[in-house]
Image (cartoon, rainbow, N blue to C red; front, side):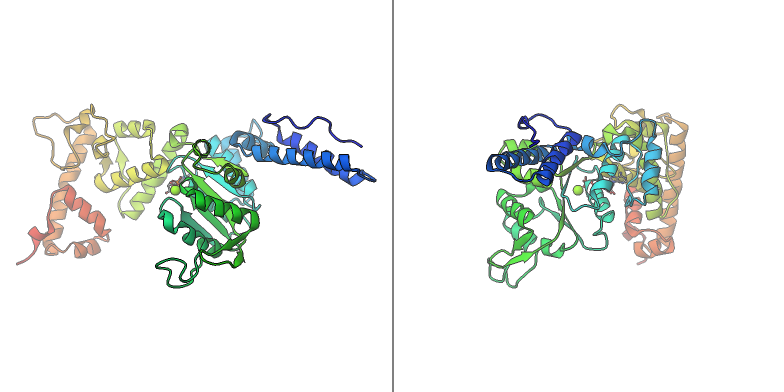
Length: 426
Ligand SMILES: Nc1ncnc2c1ncn2[C@@H]1O[C@H](COP(=O)(O)OP(=O)(O)O)[C@@H](O)[C@H]1O
Ligand SMILES: [Mg+2]
């Protein structure tokens, strides 16, 4: 009987190929053996368990990326553009994800392979790195794409309500449970459930979630009845779950169950090559949303934005671009940045967007762009004053006439210190 002799070494890192080989040996042993006596069976079971443990350990991210990436491996000569094209050619749905950064493409390629399976996926990364977007990508590329996608933010629900939110409740289960109610898992039946901020799930909820993962059944709070649910689980966290495990705040068995596929999204400061593309994209988007011409940037501002560390990642970049598109005239500069991130030594602070007052005339203009901006601001203010006069101070009417977003108009008025009531006709 051909059994592999040494038990698998514990804690060693085994390659995906090595594991497959062990499984293959186990399989062929079973297939070809005429008879198995008890010691052989026991040995086989031990080895099968050892392989199973090793598979669990493989969910550690680097090894999984290596494992999933090994077939077919991206060719070394394949450029990032090629990799993206290849995804496109395979009809991959990007859901608006863009960027050619190698680490982002790694994540997308893992998502592509994971999507058609029902394996749980754990996505980690700092806030604003695109975890929720990635969950949608996985849903959109899978066989459940036309079924429900249900998102639950485990960090946003009070601890006392989380179980009822996830699993539903029976009427009278607790004070306030006036009717039977189905939970998010039942709503996600046949589809995908996205468990955001899974690290915030209290331990008791973790136990229940583990049970669902094992049995594919739920029980509504206060009910004994079990209900079968078939929901694909994608979870996300901006916490280090391994640390939480060490602190006793997250169950290790749940971690392994959730992270069969583990995708890590790098922070934006580690993929700075994406910044120009993101600036251009969100610049156009903001112009469209705010119904204005795209804003140009001074070279100082551009240099700042290309090098800034973006603790809030892509979400912060997007919000910054919208802010600039809203506050600036034709050209945005450093002065339009929020004060808390604005470089203090910048000479361009001679003019501050927050009060909209032109610099004292004794201050020499910092650049041609500055002069242009001042002129543009002046024209903007005059135009707003005339507009308000024409409509008797009714902002909604002016927004309609100019085909502009009302809140944008309000912000512009604030920027220039204009009060609509001063233009009311008495
Ligand atoms: N690669 C990307 N391409 C385009 N937009 C992105 C990308 N990654 C994230 N975003 C955008 O950034 C914002 C934050 O993404 P989100 O998925 O909510 O992040 P997280 O869940 O990690 O906090 C969203 O507006 C999302 O559309
Ligand atoms: Mg999020």
